[in-house]
Image (cartoon, rainbow, N blue to C red; front, side, top):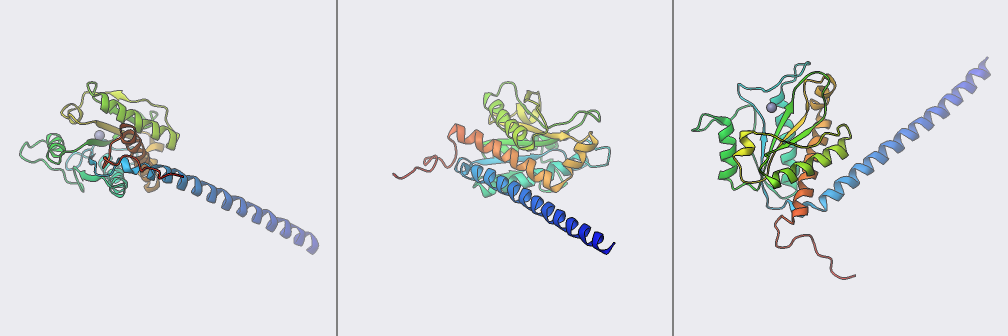
Length: 248
Ligand SMILES: [Zn+2]
C-alpha cells in the first residue's frame, strides 16, 4: 500500500514538474513574442516623433455613452484606452492632447463638446485625430471597427492601417473599416478616425473592454496601426526619415 502511494506520489510530482516546465516555457515564449512585436514597432517610432496627435475619449460628463449588460459605462472604457494610447504615443515622441483628462468634458464657448473636440485639434495644429468609442447593438455583435469620413482618402488609409493591426494582434474580429457621417470626422481636414473598440453590448466583449490588460493590448494595436500609417507616409520628425545605416 505504502509503496503504491509512493509510486503515485513520484508520478504525480513528475507530471506536475513537466506541466510547470511546459507552462513556464509557454509563458516565456509568449512574453518573447510580445517583446519582439513591441521591438518591431519601436523600430518604426521615428515616424511618430514630433507628430501632434489628438486622442479623443468619446462621451463623458452627463453623457456616459452606451452601458454594457454588466453595467460598464462606455465613457470609462474610452478614457482608459485613450490614456494608454496617449502613453504609447508620448513614449514614441509624439505630442499628445486628450480632449478630456477625466470624466469631465469641455463645452467651451460653443456649449457643444463635439465642436470643442474639433476646435482643440485645430488650436494645437494636430496632424491626426483619433476618437475612441465602444459600439453597442445586440448581445451577439462583436469586434472592433474603424470609421472614417467618406471624403477623406488619408482618413481611410489610417483607418485601414489601424484595423489591420487590431485584426492581427487581437485576432478576434474580421471587420473592415466603414465610412460614416460624423461631426468629429467631417469637420476636420487632417486624417481623422473613430475607433469603435468593440461592442460593449456583448457580455463577453464587455468583460474584455473593462479589463486592464485588454485595454493595453487594444491601445497598442491602435498605436501600431498609427505608426505603420505614418511610416508608410514617411512622416515624423522627419527630415531624417528612417534611421540611415552607415555602411557595413
Ligand atoms: Zn460612443
